Amino acid sequence: MTITTTPLPFSAQQQQWFERACAHISTARMKRLNMDLTDIHSPTGAERAASLHMVEHMLKMGISANYQELNPLSGNAVGRIKGSGGGPALLLYAPIDTHLEADPAHDLPWAGPELRADMLPRAQERGDTVIGLGASNPKGMIATLTEAVNCIVEAGIPLKGDVLLAFAGGGMPVVVPGRHYAGLSSGVTHMLLNGVTADYGIIMKPWDEVYYEHPGMCWFKVTVKGTMGYAGIPRGTPGFRSSVVPAATVILELEQWLIDYTARHTSEQIAPEGWISALRSGWPERPAFPSAATELYLDMRTNPGQTSGAVQAEFDTAMRAILARHPGIDAEWEMTAAVPGSRTDPGSWIVQSALRAWQEGHGGKPYPGAPHMSGQTDAAAIAKLGLPLVRIGYPWIGDKDMPAEFSEGLGGMGVSHIPDLTGACRAVIYSIIDTCTRSRAETGLASAG
Image 1 (cartoon, rainbow, N blue to C red):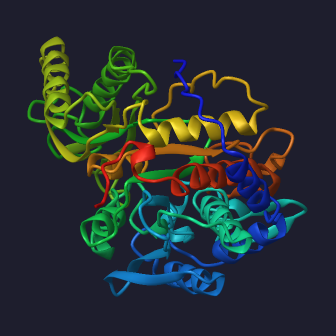
Image 2: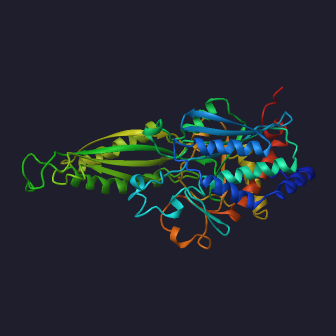
Image 3: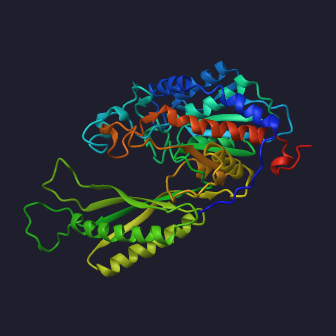
């Protein structure tokens, strides 16, 4: 969908500030921070060391910074440039946790036959590319936002509004019971409910696009029931019902339903996918005894117009229809987690600023509209808590730059091509100057007086 962009050219002074700040962009500095962060293991719920590193780094940049502790294992890093007053406050945000444990006992074989170099928290430098767990997402995002602020500081740009640079733990769409049930935006929710706020926000993620719709998600557990049996029992023996074989029927039925679900709920920018992500049944060390229960786990993404209750009702209807078509199957289901989607008005100042920044970086051509996606991020929670937010990013590493051994599967989101970060860095600098060198009234906000 094409978004209308409101033209608002920089003044001669703003253009001068922009060019001066962009002249300070250092790919070497971005690479160094990208590598340093990749070397610091920060799985969800254990981000303390990475966040403390960023606090120290921001202090060395010459801005105020503090560590916001969630618990002994985890916390957030928040930095701030104070403006002269009267301007909007702008939050620049990325999560800081990674989705893998980087422990073969935990991750294999589910992440693949081995932990590749892009799945391990050890940075490798290959020319302009950094390899390692989270080197692109989230460590490359953090390096990009930090570099943009560094350039503003070094160029001495006079800001009216504050710029906040913030990184939170618990951002991955996971739940880690052993670490205070971290995940599902636990860190950024704590951040925003405990004194960190702004008028507008930018979240950095992969893809060189502008998103104002932010997907939510609902998790479901389906339990297909049978009886515990014995491998020596002939099929058809009264009193023995497999749970595994009927679960296969449920899987195939749900797979088709999920395809239709995406088509029904596609919105302006979101095509909400759904996947059966995990199965569990019986004892691997006791295959002689088929299990009385087989569990299926699903992640269903949602658009901003869907409520968790509506998704629950729709899933209930789908499961009842499946059981009606297969009366021999006994199953129950429940929702286990829900993060609602959210939306920022595309006419909002921060969305329009991001669009102008995109145009500046692409030779002035109109933004053609973002492809549909359903990648869930902390953006859903941030905008749901009332902060107008836009998602921008950098190009996903292309075939020409991706080492062949990392081209299959999601991997560790761990291939960061540093030159690709510079365009996003310029876009962030643009929106900082576009927003924070103006008065609140110029951006549509009420006066602070």
